Length: 390
Length: 134
Image (cartoon, rainbow over all chains, first blue to last red; front, side, top):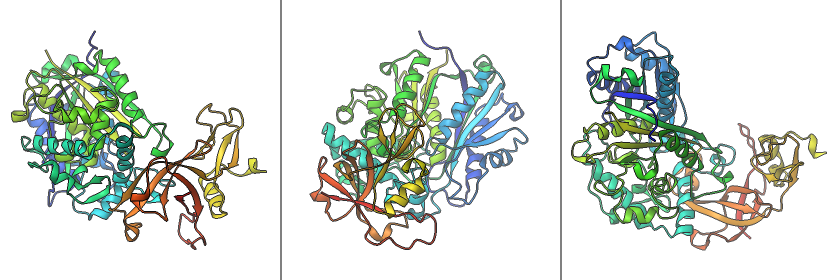
């Protein structure tokens, strides 16, 4: 039996994703906020009782304390507003807190979202800022970067299951292609497998086109108690399951180098709570920070058997029109990955899909969607399952 | 004696400076492990103590990093891998004395230590170990 709604998403908003010159994180968050409230005319902003804002790092803008800043710039003061941090899963965690707030009964309406402003900094600086979310004493100290950590997983996956560089490349080809139908995406582009294979090496075997983008952006979702949803919209989307899990900070300490336990634990909880199984998912946004990460997500989320992720993309099953379309937005790979904004942005895409607002990338008849957000090399995992309202 | 040494990261790296690779061992279930969390990851016992490792193992996975953080940029490209040591402890490290083409998963490797520890005035003043083909 399908689970009872825990919370309702009644509106969402996204800033433009990309290299946004002349706007800081708080101003991008304002853009996302404005779009969300414009989409919900029945909502008075004074109805919003709490704000959760994911942001990975104060490094980029020399600015911490983003919770208060987000409330300040949206003029939602003096509601409680805090920043949530779980590396790249910061705003997946913000949404989870929002769900818990309304489900607890303490709040009727809350806002959750995320921010990251990155492109004004040079790549080595960003590489270092991102690496801060990996283990310092053993991984950073030994020169590991985030592409390096996922490259270690890719090498192991290719060895264990025969996954090929061409299969990894197909993830990039698909996601850049999907982004062509998303006006908010950072890098919509028709590319070929050869473009990916011939791009420069970042951390062998991963090349430039295997990596997600350094992007500016912000995201925002408005959550209410399910019984209040119809007051705000005729087309609510319900969150019917979520799960969150932590794993070892060091990749080296884990029993498996080809699977993320945080994904498996979080998704198992979410599936059970939602009363659905992987085959019920009509559309998914997964954490494709690197192409190998999308392949592993297919397997860890149960969209295919372990080791068959490469085959799944090769067979076109995750294309729009396939059995289980993945990253219709373009994903982190091509919509872009403003780290702290990503988790809530995934919820936005599932909302668009389940309310029929996804334009040319619409998955016809989508009723149940899944959002999968990972922090770092897998030390944090957050999964939400959403259902179209009746 | 070693039971009295602190179960800390600084102590791990102090051993490295002394050219010793040490891990913690659970005195209840026998599990040998890193990182040096004071509590056993297997049986959750608090009864643990330092134990020296052989430093010999095999390569589990590897990469060659071309785009590095500012601290490592001058060394790029460089190799990094994870080894599984004889005691079933896994350890990441920079791989030296080797080209990428010479590496393969399963290759016998060993842990070596920097010859003369650099004088590190700023934090962290840790020693360094490396991985090399055995």
